[in-house]
Image (cartoon, rainbow, N blue to C red):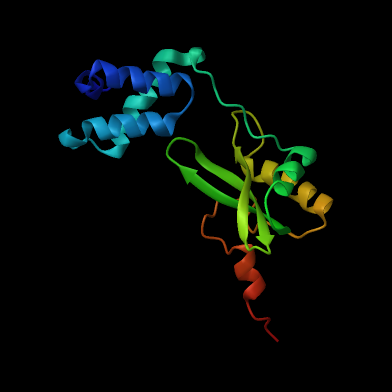
Length: 173
């Protein structure tokens, strides 16, 4: 385990452990990082402290359930937001805790904006998050009668052009 754990006060350790046991890694990392910032601990080192706590607790961590990806659940989430759904979009994102994952969002018109519908993480032994998100997004878009946009379902690309950008590009002759 990281030697940084020993520098934390008991109250801070309890707060970190509470966040870990409730599967809130970002909050746990924030607590560690802020507590040890005067010692110039890096964000990566704070992540390592939290990862070590996950290993200590193992199966006792109450893991968050994945977002539902069935059409009725996604359609309900899409319909709960103000604005007309103009398209469904899948976007790659990633972080050091989860590696690559895909966000499913509803692109809204009138008022314009977007709303998060689900986050699709990869699962050990399961299909890659891109193919899972592609299937769920296409099914939802078909159900809603709107376009689906996922420019890179097979390869993580967090810089791929967004749906609204593609819609605004002039057509070439």
